[in-house]
Structure formats: C-alpha cells, structure tokens
Length: 290
Image (cartoon, rainbow, N blue to C red):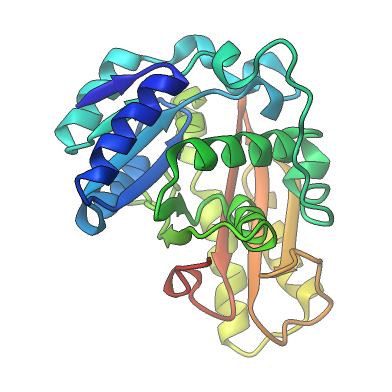
C-alpha cells in the first residue's frame, strides 16, 4: 500500500495505476475507521483495479473544534486496517495541502446545504462539498463510494457531480449497524455505557416511522410525531431535528407521495448522532450518478 501525503505523491501513484489499465475507486473518510467505512473499502475493492482511500478532517466543515475531533485520529491503526482491506493508495494530506493560505474558493449546492445538517451546523456542508470536489478532482475516480448513513451528503454530492458534469459513478452503500440497530459512527466513541444503551432509540424512532408508512400512513406530520414520541421515551435523548423529506431535494413534506427519507439528529450526552431510513424506496438500489 502506498501512503501519499502530498498532491504530487497522490497524482503519481494514481497515474501509475491508471496507465496500467486499472479503474479507480475512491472512498473519502475522516479517519477513525470503523466497520461501516471498511465495508465501503471492501465494496470498492470488489469493483475496481485500484482503491484509493483518503483520511482528512476538514476544518472548514466544522463550526466547533471538538466536532472534528482531529486530535484523536490514530493514523497507525487506520493504515493497518486499510492495508488489511487491500487498499492500494492511502491519502493523508495536511490541512495546508488542501487549503493553502491563499485558498479562497468554496463550493455551495444552493438549496441543499442550508437545511437539516446545514441549519444545525452552519458551514458544515459547504466545507464538505468543497473538499469533496477537491478530492474527486485529485483522485479522478471512476467510482465514488459513500454510505447511506450520510443521506444529505449523498444528495448533495450527487447534485454536484451532475451539475458540474463530472464523469463519476456515485455508489451508495447500505448503513452498517450494530445488532441493536445503532448506526456505526466515529461519534459513538463519545458515548458512555448508559448513553450507549440509550442510543438505539434513533433506530427505533426511524423504524416506527417506516412501520407507520408501510401500514398506510402518508401524513409526514404524523410520521414525524411517531419519531418524536419514540425519542421522548428516552430521557437522555435531546432532539436536534426530525424530518420527513423528499429524497431528491430534502424539502420537508406534508404528505409522502414519492421517494422520501425519514431523518433525525439527536444529542445523547456529548455525542451528536444522525441516522436516516428510506420510506418509499430503497436508496441503496439507486447506486450510480454520473
């Protein structure tokens, strides 16, 4: 496995593989790897001759220093996991590499980066979109792999790829969960023992909304109340938002008449947890955008 830390090192390593005839699959991460991210790497390994994984905590994607939690990244551990997963190239740039002092360009997907996560964490999604475009430009992948747990990011990146005519297939992989339904996330490391016991309430709330939908309920307000009612039974849960939104635009719905997502963000202790669940169709079945 090649470990690239500069733009030139990355470009040289990718070019060598591309000249050898390999297609390139790219998995962007923020490090602190867990099974959810590694499942993306394995999927990329199955479908490409060359797999590139980045590990970068973007300071422009966080409104508070503790959100990025960058000081706790264990690159030695992450690199060992990536090598075991047969990664070809690991890209670990410094902040100054992707954001030199005179960098002033930012990318915004209007209408998609101001709601939900964008409203709760100002600047987060603009920062994410900007660094995603930088990384896609540098790696030049045939396929880009994202997890469905980050549903809003998936919608934004899909629109960015389409609007900028980037010839990249977006592959959406299913959310990986613990046995009790909690979606795997690096934020879970912030949960204490009792908080960890409380955390599956997110999955239970989403499941309640989907079960109501499958039973015939189409009022988005009722579906939101189903989620809120479940979360209210857990004293440690502090709701940031619950949403039933159009799957393509993320606009809040009054009634579910087409593809839709149930989404939520909940604080449990120091951990801000997010999750989502398709209501009207299987998001993971719609895997490519170019």
